[in-house]
Image (cartoon, rainbow, N blue to C red; front, side, top):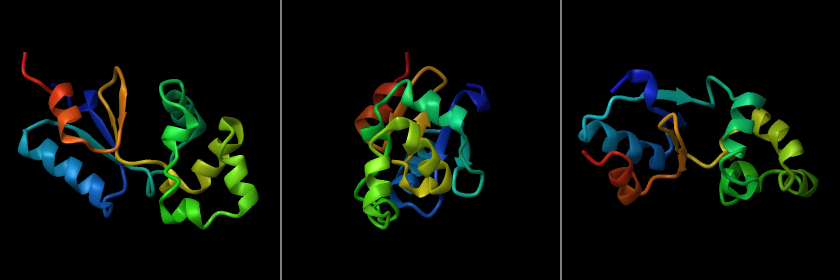
Length: 121
């Protein structure tokens, strides 16, 4: 498997991201980790994700970053065009981790989903 074919997006100190990274390592799956808090996200990447999932799936409304937004920002986050700017400024409001296998993205970490994605053929 090529290193660049699997990318895991997230923040290293997030517990769910840690679980996903541990699972990938334990199953000897080579991946690239992209820390979107340090490396940032851009509109092209966000639009790519939004072409696969809805804005309501991409944003984590239970996270502290989202909860600390003003009421008007929370309203803006419901519309993809304005949510993109908010996510660029506040990448921690993006649901994580995001696993990209170069064909599809998977939000969050669910062991059964990862097993299905990486099942041996």
